[in-house]
Length: 259
Image (cartoon, rainbow, N blue to C red; front, side, top):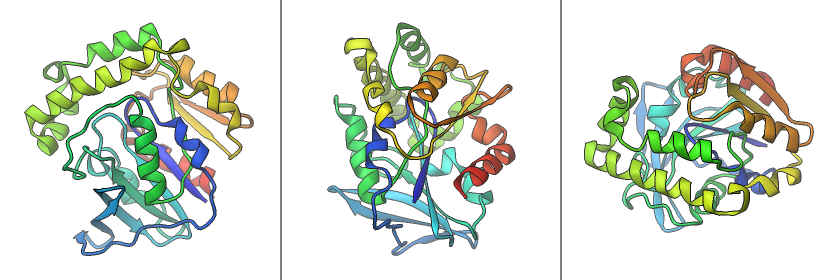
């Protein structure tokens, strides 16, 4: 079984349809650069592009860390790569095409970009995911429009991504991301994957920060209601980066659920 934890922004619940396939494959690092003594970094050819990933641990249970908006393994999942139990889990943090070090190509947002990310991830390793948004509302559109201009982001949030991408690519891709997400608002009920939630049969943990400024609480409630047998865990002081701000609590929660 492979569990997938997602990061910033709208998360790819469409990937759930690829869950629990037999023959789990955890990619082996080829020519890799060592990070300390326990994390390796490498690229692997997937669907015509070179996808970058970091890998650590030696457990039989594989965990794929999936970043969201403009994210990468190194900017989004440091505490998980460092501290998740390496005897129980093999942890892989990957950069979707156009993000992080999975460039070229530059990131774009066609109407099927979620499905494209899903196929890339499934072809990298078989998977299941927990996440946040299943649809886009007017309220969400207003929130996304508010983050279009990266110069208005807090320095703490902006600097790591600016260092990774360079300001021009970072700013340009953020604007493209907002346009890519807002296109779902024009679909019936703003649908991303709400019609797929009842088909989820694997165990699902939904973690939500009640002070999340990007994803309102009703999204977590909706997913919990429509994924049969799912578990909802609320973090009263958590924001959108709860897995970084409260890394110890989050890692313990994930480890307990995944075992």
